[in-house]
Length: 409
Image (cartoon, rainbow, N blue to C red):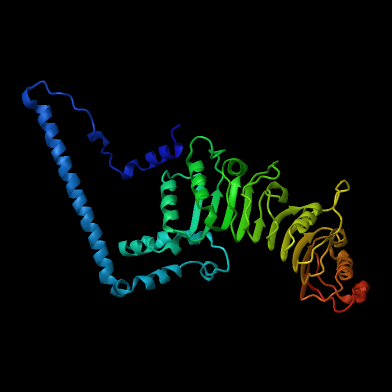
């Protein structure tokens, strides 16, 4: 099937290009001797004028390119004389602070750095192509109006050589495209190409439709990123346990789950995960299961812990000895959550609840009973605190020292 993206691109670019394909045709034989008829003579003259015009245009474009280079050299002689190694370091400084320091994942803007540098002049473009560090942030979007995304990605991956890469695979919903896998193979080819370099993924952000996730799980066995994995999805899903990754001795240490993804949607090896961020609702059972399956977890953030359903069967009390930082939001008292988990190594707690200031004393008292050891930092966020003091809450006086909480609203 003809790719609709290519059709769109051809219609949009007609005003920018001269179509010379009409010159490639089968000429009819002239019945007159040696083509001496008047139309044939005029045709030869026209074709000669076209050939001369093309040759002249090529000459003018080459001269224009040389003049641009000469102008850049004339206006910026110092930049021209800098060694290539210094220019490469200057170019790398255009990345975000976290990317430069190696402490955080890259941003979407980081993927534009080599394009912006290459747009300055031919010399910078040549140096950028020989600097693999500039090509270590790969961004792929769909649907796209460009038919040459696959070619650009191929060159991009080649330019990055063997370096670890940050990958963004983003699918933007469009009303005229329900499923990017239908109608053409562009999106499949892009996913297949990315799979070929998945052994170099350091940080990966996947924001896809469930159709794309199912295609990856059934057709592509990826290797998981080594540092951070972010999963987002378009719409809801009934899928459970989709396996995107090959079994590997290495896996992400940091996992973030957002927008339409729940813990049970994907099969994830939690054995090496040390940091988890969950921005969606979680059931108490999902929270307990995560703590049970992630033995080396050090910090965890639950966006919102749902109330316990009467029919929900919770696992036996989970004792997690590695977790030191916990953040969660609940609309019930802490006892409903901490009755099912024991966290002896916890040193920092951020507990948010929105059930009114009347429950504040009960919340703090619950926390003090579960965590009698001193905290490095504990914060309780109440959405309805206005003016209060210990005098109005006698129960607070029973909270054992050194349990201390900072309160905010």
